[in-house]
Every structure is written in C-alpha cells, then in structure tokens.
Length: 331
Image (cartoon, rainbow, N blue to C red; front, side):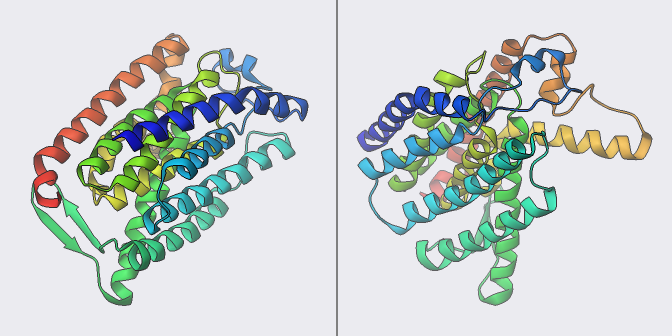
C-alpha cells in the first residue's frame, strides 16, 4: 500500500512541477486547440489553449514507475501498451495542430494503428506476462476459454481489440469539457487500484495509482477554465491504463460498469449517428451527451461535477460487483 501511495505522490509532484514549463513551451510554439464552430458558443473562447497535455501526465507516470515499480513483465507490458496508444494520440494531436483544423487522423488509420497495438499487447500478455486466454463472467460463475492455439489467439486478440479500442475511444469522446475525462478517469482507476491490490497484483496497483496521481496533478492545470488540454495523447493514455488493468486482473466484463460514464458518452454518439442516418433527426441536441446538457443551459462546471458523481457511482458499483462475484473465485 505504501508503494501505491508513494507512486501516486511522485506522479502528482512531477506532473505539477513540469506543468507550467510545458504550458509555456506549447504557448511559445503556438500549439493550441482548434474548436469546432458548430459546438457550444461558450467553447469558442477556448481556441488556442495549449493541447497535448497528456505528455506531462506520461512524464509523471514514468517518473513514478522509475522510483517505485519493480522491473517485471507486467509493468513493462502495461507501460509499453500505454506508450504506444498515447503515441497514436500524440501523432493525432500533431496532425490537428500542423494542419490547423479539428480533424486529425482518419478513423480507419487510427483503428489500424490500434490494431497493431492490440497484437503487441496480446503477445506480451499471453507469452510473457502469463495472462490466460479466458474471460470471466460475473454472477454466472463462468469462465469462457478462448484458447489455446492459433484460433484461440485470434479470438483473444479480437476480444482485446474490443476492450482496448473501445476503452480508449470512449475516454477520448468524453474529453470535451475542462477536467471531465481526467476526473472520471481517476475515479475509474481508483477502483482498479483497489481491485489489483486485492488480487495481489501489486505492480498493476502501482501503475494505476501512479496514473491517478498524474491525473490529479494534471487537473491542477486542466480545471475550469483550463490552462491546457490533455488532447488525444492523454485520453488514449488513460484508456490504455484502464484497458490494461482490466485485462491483467481478468475483469474485462466489469470494465463497462466501472467506466460507466465513458460507455454512456460513447453510446450517445453511436445512437446519434445511427438515428440521424436512418431518420435524418437528432436524438440529442449534440453528441457526446455532455454537450447536450450544455445546450440545455447547464454551466460547464455543473455538467462536469454531476458527471463525476455519476462516474463515482459507477466505479463504486463496479467494485461492489467485483467483490461480490469475482473476489472469492479469483483471489
């Protein structure tokens, strides 16, 4: 427990210490955010705010792991996956800045890169970390075996693709208001810190705790009105840690509950797109759903705090389900 707290503290201190300098660097290079004109008019003032703040969070995370973590396969695999997906986000952010428009990488190109990241995660987790190719189903006490052999590896890779790509994209869609995705990510990772600790996977707990510390440090600058945005670099990194923690603790099917807010945000976009294509009408005033409430007249801080409350409830309920149905069978 001391190591987890120390990792969080180191990540927090490093992130806060480097934050101001990194913001000044981005401002001097004019690496600012581009805002869509069709969005809430209150967001237009955010144009030019430095982005790619996820880089600072990763610095805090890596510093904490260098100080606290043990050099083993689980830590290395998690850090490598997070670095790869965050690298995809960084490249996406750079495309937006260099082309001076809100659109970055195409969805097809980003999905292809994420697929390569999943193949890497699959090989590392199965052959080096020792993750079993099984999926545990809460309540029903089932264990779905997706291996062994080439077919099993392919099925498990497809499952990992769903978990990693789904999680990273859901967190990315949630990142639309100051502090929303960061705070929600910290709450979800707190649950996974506890789960990993109970599973005696202390290395995973240290990574999750360090990421929580880095996120809280980033919120020092990202709280409304934000001095910096995390960009895709940060949102994909948070999603990557969440996905890795779920896979390593064999709680993949609890991830949609623990990260319930991210699921709601992603579903709101899917529903909006599907209904509009079928009927030409919109279900929400704007998707993701946090913008819908802004158009209803809610102030940004009110949306963020209330969504944090929803995420806190999801994280607590997900941890309750884990303790009720999986702790005795896994632990």
